[in-house]
Image (cartoon, rainbow, N blue to C red; front, side, top):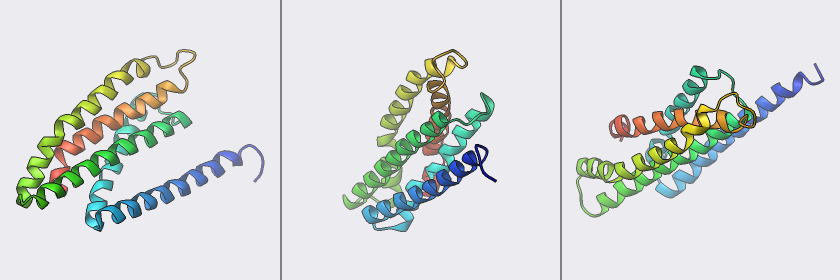
Length: 168
């Protein structure tokens, strides 16, 4: 089949391949930094859970994934990855200082909790006005992106506080 109907399928296929390539590149960079596949996967474990929040937010609101929504997914993947890197790096520093594994994980998580929550709270509060103007002229790009980022912020922050310690 040719013509305009093929373009969305082609674009979706290219986006899927580029996404897989990006995930592989992120894993390789994390592996090179941490020299541990377990630590690289621990950082990346937050990405699917952050994605769930974004997908759920889209489903509960507009039910349409737009290019701006995809920008929102990419934006929060960066934030979720950064939070994971901070946690693993901080825990490794505590272990190097002589803390036990359990103490390093608990203390490291507690020490970073306020910065993680402040980042999520600040971004979330800034995005609420953008997410509320759904359907108004001129907000076609901002609203879908804000909705996705808000959903991902909620799920990624909850994952950080509830699941990350169990995975570590």
